[in-house]
Image (cartoon, rainbow, N blue to C red; front, side, top):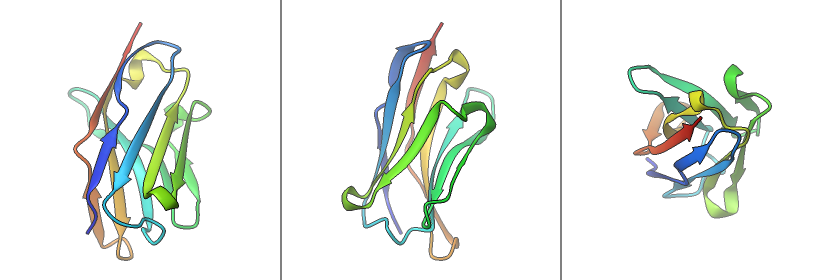
Length: 117
């Protein structure tokens, strides 16, 4: 199992940037995939970005070209660099880890991102 802690959320004006961090309680180089998901009020939790153990990356359509996911195995941390933020990016951002050949899944507690217009 792995515990995840997100940080870096906050309030930012449209067009601004934020970097989210997801720190894991153990080494991440053998974790199958780590990703970021977003949940706006009253909506489902949607994929923002995911990076696999082989460094394959996928982004949600709404963030392509603006967000970048990366991982630092030495620091057991995954990052989400968010640029050109829009009000519709507002929501709680959750970090997720899939491990044990995708049989296990852990979620962080979430970090709030609010983008004002």
